[in-house]
Image (cartoon, rainbow, N blue to C red; front, side, top):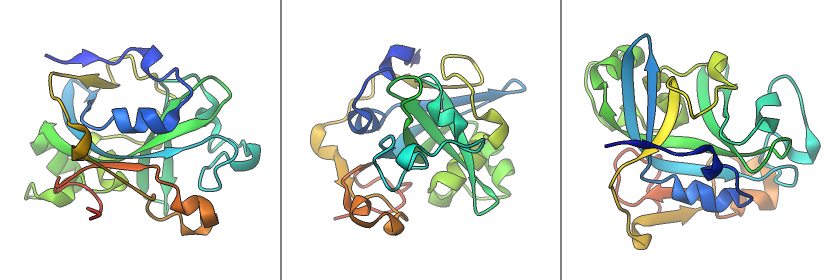
Length: 202
């Protein structure tokens, strides 16, 4: 049985720790009565203000990233390359824009719907590998940015699934090379051996 994560789960200061804890949790969307869900297999943490890889570096605040500054437990969705809808989870406290990118999930429910959304006929690992594919499969768009993750449209839950410490891999984040030294920070977490993970580091 699924149990929604309470908002105080996100209302903590250590975004890196929360990003690790999200591995193995289940993200669920319910739009128009259609449910899709998947187990989170990969995340990346982005630290407010000081992290050169973050949209909030240096206190940057625009209409595009405004939801990063929202209350913890808010969805922040941005569009990458004009097409990929990238889902992030806001943590810490209001006006402190820590966020966690959901990079990969393992599909659980609504796989046929996910395939339709992705324009695919075969449910292989490419369905939800990478943050753009996660957003597409779950039916998430920029319009969902600002959604509180305690409602019924988008939420994260836990079940009795347990992960051992050594099953979680840690690495530098992907695709943030322009962030200089910050690109090397070990802020990416992933489920070792999971075929949906963007890149299985050894």
